[in-house]
Every structure is written in structure tokens, then in C-alpha cells.
Amino acid sequence: MEVDDRRIYVTGGGSGIGLRLAEMLAARGAHVALFDLRLADDVLHRVEAARIRSERRVRGYLADVADAAAVAEAFRRAAEEIGPPDLVFNSAGISCPRAFADLSQEDFERVVRVNLFGSRNVAAAALPLLRPGSKLVFVASMAAVAPGYGYTAYGSSKAGVFAFAEALRSELAPRGIDVAVVCPPEVATPLVAWSRTVRPAPTERLTRFAGSLGLDEACQAILAGILGRNFLVIPGRRANFAYLLSRLLPKRLAHAISDRIVAGALADSGESQRGPGGPTPD
Ligand SMILES: NC(=O)c1ccc[n+]([C@@H]2O[C@H](COP(=O)([O-])OP(=O)(O)OC[C@H]3O[C@@H](n4cnc5c(N)ncnc54)[C@H](OP(=O)(O)O)[C@@H]3O)[C@@H](O)[C@H]2O)c1
Image (cartoon, rainbow, N blue to C red; front, side):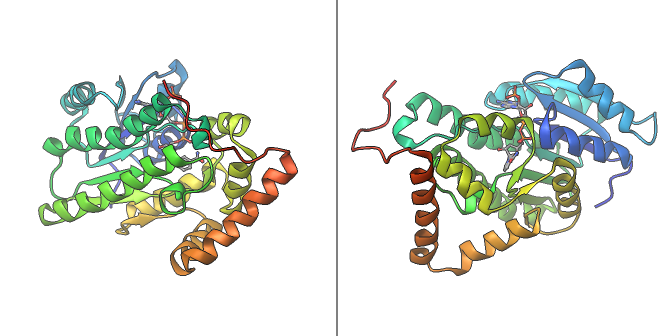
């Protein structure tokens, strides 16, 4: 896929993977529209500074992806101002790494609303604007294909994103519109910096198993992947290995390995398994 003079919409473009990818696309000549809950002043400046051609446009729009009407309106305005998108990169997402017994109904619903319903809302807003040759990319996670301790909400929301993207790919292929899904392992972003301070010890150790990538390294691999034709993009060699293991190993064996890691982390951290208590009601 060509990038120069193309229009790229990036949700979650105010931070982390979305922002870095937006800078990389601007550096290849794209017009860029960023969508986020908040956009700090320096964010638009960073993307503008990355442009190779000063006539390329960079715009920012405030929108909550969980709000279908707000995303549709923001996309409509962007289409008026910079033109309909050639590539939509849906990076907006949140995480709430917590054992299910400690996870409130409200937190569970919030994660699913932003990650899964947000993907649905972004696709619905983009659909009327997409033409043959354009592309929709959803950021899921390794937790979509190999969910573990602490990721009941996040893992199920991202597995939903994966399934949604795959079904949508089948529907849009006849119209010449491409769909891809990105499943990164841990990438050093503000989301992860926060997550590391709150996630349970077993989640921390399982995450390390799939490897951790620097932001530039991850975004370079993501960019190369989404400019190609693959449906599934997994940045990082170690993450690709972990993915293959999760597909090839019998579940019983995969679970035995994961259970050993969890047991070791619980023992080392002094955290004990919870009793039969249920999740926190709201
Ligand atoms: N970093 C990783 O290790 C990793 C691994 C696998 C998958 N992912 C996925 O990659 C994507 C980007 O993550 P990241 O690490 O780059 O996180 P990040 O640095 O927090 O960037 C995500 C951006 O999305 C925004 N956002 C959150 N909820 C939103 C909403 N309802 N509407 C619009 N924007 C919203 C965030 O705003 P606030 O900061 O205000 O919340 C933030 O600016 C997410 O979908 C995440 O699940 C990340």
C-alpha cells in the first residue's frame, strides 16, 4: 500500500502506538487525522514536525470511540477537511489488568465498551467513507490469542476485536476493502508504564514470556505489516514464537506451562490464590 499523499485516520492518536505510527506515516508523506479523548498541544506539533512535505495536512479531533455518534461526527468532519481515509488505524484502547475476583462489573464493561464496541463504532463511522483500495486496521493484542491471568476483561475484549475484524474482512473483501488486525506483545507506551504499577505478579510474568518491544521497534514492524497484505500482524520475533506455541501446543500442555508461571509468580510475590469469593459487585 502506498502512503504518500494518502489520508490516514488514527484513533488513540494522542499517545503510544497510535501517535508514533502517525509520526511515521507523516514522515512518509501522508495526511494525518488524529482522534482521541484528549490531544495535548505538542501532539499535533510532533506529527507536523515529522512531515516530509509541509503541504501535507495534520488535524486533530476529540472523540470517545465508545460513543458511536461522536466518532461518526468526527470522521465526517475529517473527511470534509482532509478527505476520506485510505487507511484507518484503530489504536484507541484501555486495559484493566486485575484478577477477575477483584474486577468490578463497571470496569469489565468499560474495557469491553472502549475496546470492542469502540472498534465497532470506528468501523461503522469509516464504512460510508471507504473506497476500493482502502484499509481498516484494528489493534487487538497477544491477549486476544493467548489470554491469561488478569486479562478476563482485556483478553475477552481483544478476542472480540480479533473475531470482529476477521468477520468484517470477509464482508469487505468483495468490495476491495482490506481489513487487518495487529496483535502486539508488550510495547513500551504510557499504557504499559501505568499497567506495570497495578498488574498482578502472575500477569507481569506471563507478559514477559511473550517479550517486550520498544515503541519504535514495534511501530516499525506494525507499519511494515499493515502496508503489506497480511490479515494478522504480530510485531516481534518472540511474540511470533509465543503465538505459534499457542496455536500448535495442545491446550493441556499450554495451560500446564502457564500454570507453572502463575504458581511461581504467586509464590515469589507472596500473593495467594483467592478463595471462592466472587467479583466485586457495583
Ligand atoms: N502497549 C502495549 O503493550 C499493547 C500491547 C497490545 C495491545 N495494545 C493495544 O494498542 C493500543 C494502543 O495502546 P498504547 O499502549 O499505545 O496505549 P496509550 O499510550 O494509552 O494510547 C492509547 C490512546 O487511546 C486513548 N483512548 C483511550 N480510550 C479512548 C476512547 N474511549 N476514545 C478515544 N481514545 C481513547 C488514550 O487516551 P487516555 O490516555 O486519555 O486514556 C490514549 O491516548 C490499545 O488498543 C492497546 O490495547 C497495547
